[in-house]
Every structure is written in structure tokens, then in C-alpha cells.
Length: 230
Image 1: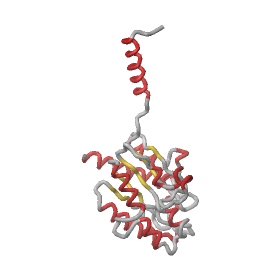
Image 2 (image 1 turned 90 degrees about the vertical axis):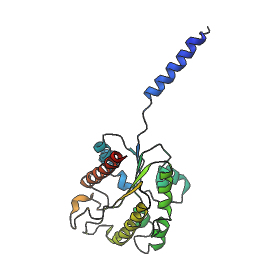
Image 3 (image 1 turned 90 degrees about the horizontal axis):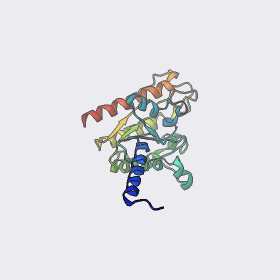
Image 4 (image 1 turned 45 degrees about the vertical axis):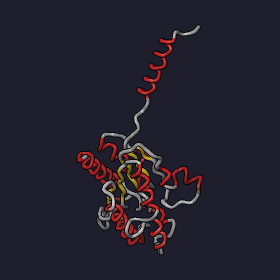
């Protein structure tokens, strides 16, 4: 039996409207990066989770533990181990980024890292894999929050020898952010008091829930402030 044309047209419109209503809205905030961003995700206490709770809106978290900025293997890189592949376009208003720590620890052992540092980001913040990724995100219209890493609390932390590289990296990320009003660098170098183990997980590398909470709250404050000024 053939349906009258008007009835058929009505059913098509109704189905389209129902599909549109049931579709979940795309979050306007994306988080990408390494285990620094992914830590505590299983208990909804990651940096991205805290930012979402503070803002009262979802934050999509594509971060992958072990991911690097510089990553040459195509298949696993496409699965997120290359941080740049975690960003797949938008539309997003904000993208929160971590990255670089594994490039130093796993790539050069936080020693003789000059070449790797230059590949990541030049002294003036203009060249390198990080500026290329940030430019790609900015071209989509999204603002960028780039997070710096926690420093060692001491007491034999595996990242004890990474301090110098961390300071240089922070300075270059700061230079990058100064070149674009839509890029914000949030350093964490001064968050951990010397000898205070409460800011790190048991491995003394990754953030504790306390640190994740403080960093997530800082991100939320920044996003709220900038959003209000628009």
C-alpha cells in the first residue's frame, strides 16, 4: 500500500526531528594529552573531570597514557599515542592540552635533550611540533589552554632530573602563548612545595587527586573569565 505523499513527507520530517532531538550535543571543550591529563579518569577525578564539574558542563577527554608530541609509528599514533591525532577537528570553543613529558623522559631521559627540545618548540615559540599543533587547533576557532607539568617533590622522584628541561620548556611555551591572545599557558612549576608528597600519586610523577583538583579548578577559572569577557 502506498502512503499519500503528504503523509510520507510528514513522517520523514518527524523522524528527522526525533533524530535531532535524541542526538547528544557535542561538548564545547576537549582535553588532549598524555597520562598527566588521563590520570584518575577511571574514578572521574582527572584534571578534565574536575574542570567539567567546576564549569557544570562536559569536557571530552581524548588523552592517552604514554602519548607523546613527537611520535613516528603511524598505526598506534593514529590511535592517540601521537597527541596531535587526538584532536580531530571541532567545533570546540576550548582545547586543553598536555604533552612533552614523555618526549623528554622516554625520548632522551631528561639528559642531552637540546635537539628534542628544539623539535618540540623553538626558543621564540614560533617553530616545532607544539606550535604546529597549537596552530592547527587555533585554525579551527578554538582557544587553547596548554598546561605545564608538576615539578618533583624530591625524595628520589623519577622526574628529579627533569627540572632544567621543564623550566626551559615552560619558558618556550610561555613565549608561544604570548604570540596569540587565544593561547593560554598555565605553568605548574610552583604548585608543589619542596618535600610535600601530597601533590603526587605514589609514583611521584603523576598528579594526586589533590593536585588534579587544584589544576582542574584553575582551568575552570580561566575559561569562565575569558568566556565572560567575550
